[in-house]
Length: 623
Image 1: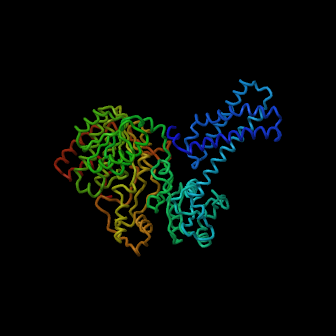
Image 2 (image 1 turned 180 degrees about the horizontal axis):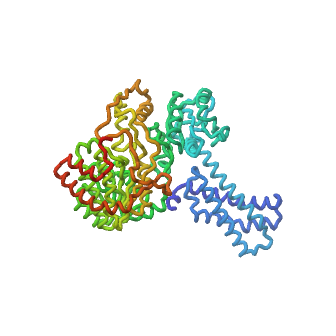
Image 3 (image 1 turned 30 degrees about the vertical axis):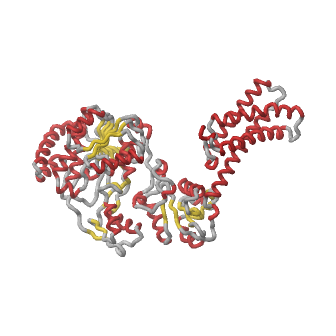
């Protein structure tokens, strides 16, 4: 408020409102008496006017209506005006009743006064917003029949909430260079209708005709939800026009504050996976994260760092960041501190193989929830160093679980992989063993669970960054086999579903994330080449190099003997081992783990393989 007192615009706002209050009150009397005021009505008006103006200004002050900027007036401000004017009228009527007894006063005057006040106060603010929108926006550049001189006529694909948001931002910003000419949308009921005065011109099939008849310089894709196949059709249609096209980030990124409308960007491969947002049960997630101490292992990796970002959204009391990589740990620390403005964290530089460090960390900080994302996951690398799969992936996980059990952690989430299903490589077999480790803690007070999902676009183990580098160098793009397929999802979606699965477990479950349809890696390579503006096998060659050691043609999400059950969440399924099998297997598993550790200490790769085969019955290196 003190800052307002030094602002000349503040006094203008108050004086203008006082004038409007007086005019509205006088107008109410005029309307009530058909613009011929009797003498007693004029006397009443003069007697009450001071009360009316003082009360109205006081209520506006009290409800903070002078804190906003009129040039940005929105629906929420208009609702506040309705609330404030209703309260004003109520107070005014109460004072008149108390002071004058309402004898000879017309009730209609106060109703008309309220309506006029709402209309005039709201109208002035809307006029001011419209003035600034016109002056600062691109409205003067709009042209549906001729090309703009200093802008770009844009056609918007999607006449839904995302498309409306794009047009509203363009109209209200002087920084965006686009001039919207029209929308296209496959919903035929929208054709011929307008959004903010911009017409819906047709559907996607009409795109060539619209481009031919309108002077379009650029295409903006604003589709909040679309399947991978739908997005591919949109991209293919845009490419056929020969015009540049950009895409609006997903609505979840905008809502979560990661990006804004101005972040229109080129299409990435992630867009082709589908745009359906993840629906989270935030209330239940809050219960085990908000105000709690959360520990994340492998916090600097692609999955671990995204888990950290998602956890921060739910306001934990403290974050314990554990990572063996100094660079990764420093990177996520700096992001938390400077970008996310979250300072309640502790960094622990060390490996999950160090059981003493883990015991000290858990004992000192008492985490209530643990997300275990630390693992070696590059298939060929682990295949050549199988002892590290034992030391890090298996025994490291056992160390973290033991510390969690000892120090009373409430929930423990193991980040697993689809490569654990009927594994054909050391990495997959080691991750399957980490799932089996839950059987050792069957009677623990800690609720253990595993979450199994496929490849993550943009992660350090994804082929997408490799393909991009190869395309940038002019090719060739190397694919192991023409028929190799994989499941894919975005890092953000994977992390959010891991959080969601964390609230569902009762103990020992393996949750499966809905990965959609598997994608051929060769098709992915072709899509990426097309997105780079080149033609596959013409501008950029695709070379098939043969399957790598430990690699199989396709991945699965369910192994033999596992019964899958749908959960209340559409994108999460659950499976649980037979209880009798759990009890019978526990003693044998402990013995196998001890032998495995000894073989790893001796760098005996052959013995590690043999013991993994004994531990994971479905482990088949022949594929």
